[in-house]
Length: 240
Ligand SMILES: Cc1cc2nc3c(=O)[nH]c(=O)nc-3n(C[C@H](O)[C@H](O)[C@H](O)COP(=O)(O)OP(=O)(O)OC[C@H]3O[C@@H](n4cnc5c(N)ncnc54)[C@H](O)[C@@H]3O)c2cc1C
Image 1 (cartoon, rainbow, N blue to C red):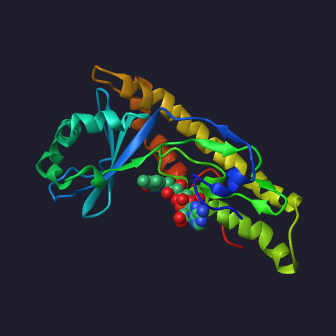
Image 2: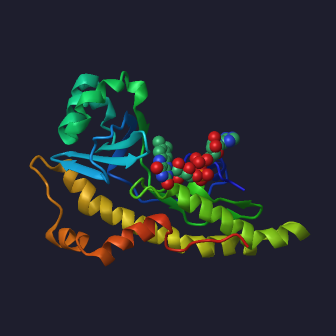
Image 3: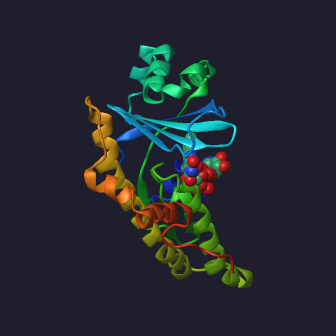
């Protein structure tokens, strides 16, 4: 079994063919403390050329700052102070605590990859999780899919493994069950990349979301759909 993540050595050594879907951005992850007076329910902030996603972790914000792919070195050359100033522009209420980011070591680079294996298995080997499909951070669903793959694998292969080795036709059943939710999730992520993230990162003028999206965001039923897709996904799994 290969569950060794997005830079899987096993999938590479096994020579499994990768379909590289690509992503226009990388993500800088960092923590900034949260104050009681901060706005609540804050998810994303958009400015010309900038996008910051903030996840409420109780006493701190987990912040994801999107940058055009491969542009970290340029940011570093501009200096940490200039980077803090960019963050303060996109989220002014953070301005009083950005000194918490004391060095570039406090800022972790996620080199975004979106890909999936054409075939997740070969005799004696099955890839699951990021090793089978690296996900975009859009939606933060990489962990969900990895766990769902593991549950599906246990459900499908568990009974057979109790009796002995399983053959490729059983490994194929795992791919058959998990490939569809993976493709659908990646399709949505690519849509988000192309329609929202790339235009924002390339913009020099203030950007507002398309009118249809703004209208849909006001509809209670529509607001439930992304929550369901992120929390539960296209095909939930239950341990049998
Ligand atoms: C900075 C960052 C932030 C993220 N934030 C989110 C988030 O908020 N929400 C979300 O859903 N997803 C997030 N993700 C993605 C998420 O972490 C992955 O989608 C998920 O962990 C995939 O699980 P996995 O078990 O397939 O691989 P991993 O969690 O990557 O686990 C692979 C394991 O294999 C081990 N390994 C690798 N190579 C070897 C080797 N040669 N020998 C022995 N062991 C090896 C690694 O040490 C690791 O423990 C984030 C990823 C990063 C990098």
